[in-house]
Amino acid sequence: MSVVEGATANAGRANRRTIPAQCGVHGGPRGFTNVVVERKENGDIIFDPHVTGECVIIFDEEAARVLFDVLGKWLG
Image (cartoon, rainbow, N blue to C red; front, side, top):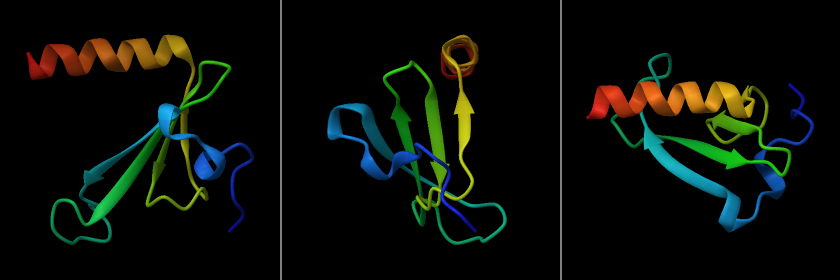
């Protein structure tokens, strides 16, 4: 599999966070799988499950704000 152009490989510390998670497909305990979240200069937010750059989820700013609002409601 090829790495998605502009994925998280070259992100700086200020724009990148690693979040411990659990993979529903591959199993393992919570924290076994890392998800890298990066904010690009153009405002896109990239989620990189398994930190491979092969299959990333890209949100534009509007979609990221919707996700932020939903998580805020769910988490109180």
